[in-house]
Structure formats: C-alpha cells, structure tokens
View 1 (cartoon, rainbow, N blue to C red):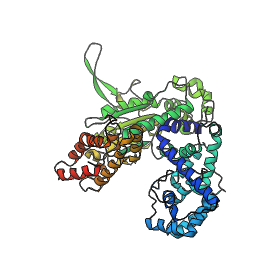
View 2 (tube, one colour):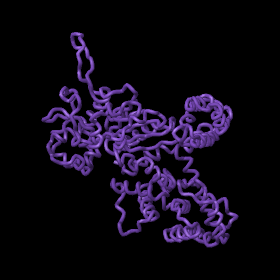
View 3 (cartoon, helix red, strand yellow):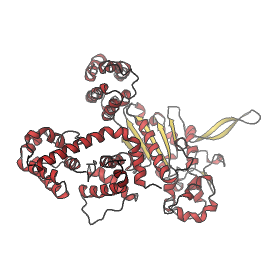
View 4 (cartoon, rainbow, N blue to C red):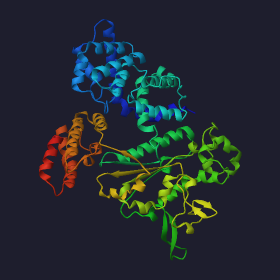
Length: 546
C-alpha cells in the first residue's frame, strides 16, 4: 500500500499538473532569477535601487510567482524607502546569500524598523523565493492548519515541542519529510522541488479538512462561480483518496457514493425523507404506501456499518473502534460491505476511517422551504450517528424495507457519521431567508467568488489571444461591486467565460462582444429591471471593454 502522502500527491498534484503548470513555471522562473542575483552578489556586485524591477517583484507585487500577498500590503512609500535604505538592502542581500532562520529573523526586524509595520506574509514570501527548504504556503495560519492536520492524521511525525515553533522552522521540518518521502521520484525526475512545495498549498486548499468544523457545508456566492462544480470536484477527490488508501479493489464508485439533487419550491419532506405515496397493488388498485425519500434511502446505504456494530453490543464509542478490535466478531459481520474492511492489513486503522464516505450534494439548497423539508433532521445534523437517532413523522409505519435502525421503541432514523452534506446557493436568490438561524448554525459557510486567476489560466490554455477577457471581467466586477443598486452578490461568475464555443480564429474583440451580447448584458438587464437601466448598462459595457 502506498504511503498516505503519496496517495495525496497523486490525486492532488499528479492528476492536476495541467492546472498547476502555470504557477509551477512562474515559481521556477523567479527562483532561478533569485539564484542569478545570488551569484551576482557573490561576485561583488551589490543590489541597488537600479534593481527596482527585481525588488518590486520580490517585495511588492501582488504575486511574485511564488505566492500571493493576500491582505498583506506594502505601501509605495515604504517600498521606495526600503530600496533606498542601505541597511535594509544589506540585510536582504545577506538573506539571499544565506536563507536560514537566523538571517530571516534579522531581515524581519529590519523590515519592521524601516516599514513601521510587520508584514509576515510578505516577509515569508521573500523566504520562499530564496530557498526551497520552505513551502509556498507563506501565510503562517494557513500553513499551521495543514501542519496540524498532517500531524493529527499521523501522516507526519509529531513536531518536537522543544524545537522552534516559528513558521520557518516548522516549514523546514515538513519539507524535509516530504522530500525524503519522494527521494526516488526526485532522483528519477518524476517530480521536482517546486511541485513538492506547491503540494503543501494544494493540501491547504483541498484537504486541510474542508469538513473540519462540521460535516455540513454550504457553498454560496454569485451565479457562475462554480459552486456545484467545486462540490463535485471536492467530493470526487476525497472519495478517490479514501479508495486509494482503504479499498483500491472494491466495486465502490463515484455514482454509488455521491448523490446530487436540486431543491425547488415544491420539494417536500416526503420527497426528502419519507411519505405516503399511491402505489398499485397486485389487483391494480391504488394503495397509500410509505415510500422512502432520496435522503433517507441514501442514509440507509451509508449507515449499514454503524448499525451492524451497534448490534454487537460492544458498549464502545463507534469512532474509537479499530479493525483489529473487530476481527473477533468477523463471523457476525458477514455482509458484503464488510469484506474489504477485513482485507485491510493495518489492524490499527479505525473503522470510522475505513468505512466509505458518502457525499450528498443539494444544489440550490435555499429554493425549498428548508425547515419543513428537514423536519426532525435538524437534531440529527447536530448529533451524528446512532446516538443522535430520532423518530420520524411516519415512524409507526416503517418496516424492514423502509426503516433504518430497529430499536425496542420501533424504527428510528439517524444521519451516519460517514455522510457529508454539501449545499450550494446563489446569494442573489431572494429565497435565502428560508435558511433560518437554527439551520444556518448547523452548516459551515464557504464563500465562492469569481476567480479571474483560474479564468486567465483556462483561457491561456484554450486560446492565448483571449486571455485579456480575464482582465475585462475583473474590471466589470469591480464596478458592479461598487454600484449601490447591485453589489458583490451580483458579480459575473468566471464560469460564463469558461466554456466558450466560439471559433478560436475570432479575435478577442469579437469574442468579447459575443460574450457581452449572449451572456452578460441579459443578466445585468434582468438585475437592473425597473432602475436606470440603459445608463448603467452602458457604463458596465465600457468597464468590460465594449
């Protein structure tokens, strides 16, 4: 069995190198540029204000090819002061020559003194540009999330408490482990240090456990930002990683583990959970029969493992039982769904980790009357597993074919611990009020905004001449955000420009006009109906480059 790090790398990097190549190449290019500067300093030619282009990319620009500065901003005034200050330049030169923790601390102190503020992301970004001993994850809080997750999962050894606890030291510790793990691949040129460094950031984006706070997430944002696409990608990725580690030879597939439905105003509790439906009997007469809804049936499939263990009366917390502890009861767990679990060689693995994840995606989650649709499930969302089981509205009518957990009090329902719920919603949808506070606090909320960086990369791969469209969209969305009648919720999603069917022989001007006429203008006209429509549409057209 492959190590977990290699499983993660395969699915996050190897299978997505086409998405990361642009960043990878920019990273390599600037790192090599720093190397040229290092050799130049060694030869006696020092940095000076004439190196402004290099220094601006290293210290100032929004992205220097290594990482984005995020919310950490260096003013023009401070930047000018930096490059004219001999002491600052001398300390920076020394760090470029010897990019270690001690020199970084000196550089940090000098920065603080000269800039009258501490910009840790910008400082760490300089470190990542000068040495591959640290990763591109320059935001210390984000890095620590990944680091803690890797440690908690047992993927890397615990970091010694007596060691320095700063960002640089922990980064060096992690990158050394990763490089050792991939030593053969590095030697055979199957990967490189740049991809391994990027790996840490991609881990943060995808796996520093998106469900760490709750197993229910709502992705929200303007239309066309890829919320449903992200939900599909994220769930597919997590399932692939699980399968690679625990059940590579099982028959489980995306279609068996991932369910997607769309809510609408007439969607009901009966559709979601259970309800009486007319069914023809053998004589052709209609009889009201209890039929399970789509979510309850999904939970029945996902909860088989928990229910089986509950029947063993072990008096143990489900999430603490290992495969080894369950082996003596193997004969009592004869269902096909147990077969692959007892084939896992590592008996120390937890059953709760080994059972397959099930993902339930609800598109347009706020379009239904949610409190009615979910009913008593509100309790189950808060208390997962059998300990959170409840009686449903039709509990007395349940039987072996429709019921879930059979108890002395009758059949009860629960949401299994291995189910992950993802909802998507457009923030401009006025039915957002249907998400009452009791339901809201049971979900983690994750905003999805227009991603021009992704769009720019996509266009560069599809038709490089069309890449200016990303800048056009960014300017348009800036103006929409500032418009009092609209705001950020009405931004145009990048997805509207991701699936262009126009001939690649068209110029960017021609494509821009078609996108405006086909997609963007009709949307804005709908948003602005009844207001000063014509004048505003003209100003938005100008912002888009029309």
